[in-house]
Image (cartoon, rainbow, N blue to C red; front, top):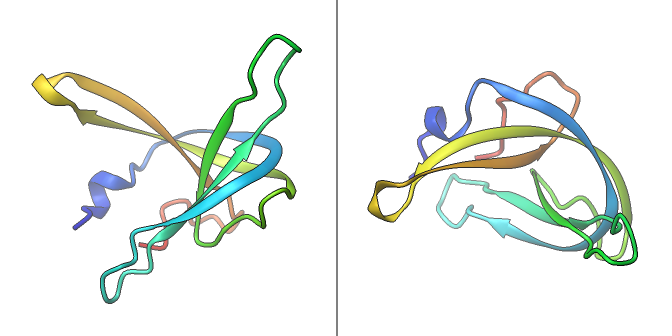
Length: 110
C-alpha cells in the first residue's frame, strides 16, 4: 500500500514543457478495490541532432494523454523522491506529473 505522505512530496521542484509524440501508455496500480491508480504515457522527443538518440519521458496522469502517434505539448510538474537500493545506496529519482492547472498539485488519483 502506498504511503501518500511519502509518495507525494510537498515540494515541487519545477515545471517543464514537454513537446513530443506519444509512443505508448500503461496503467499503474488500480487493481485493488477503491484504488483508481494512474496512467503513465510515454512521450518521445526529437533528437537534438542527427547523431543523437531521441529521449523518452514517462508522464503520469489520471488518464492517458492520447493515442499512440499523437503529438503533444504539455506542462509537467517535476517531483523528486529518494529511495534506497540494495546495500543501502541512496538514489534520487524524478517523476513527471501532468500539470492540470487546477492548483491541486498534491491531488493525484491514487
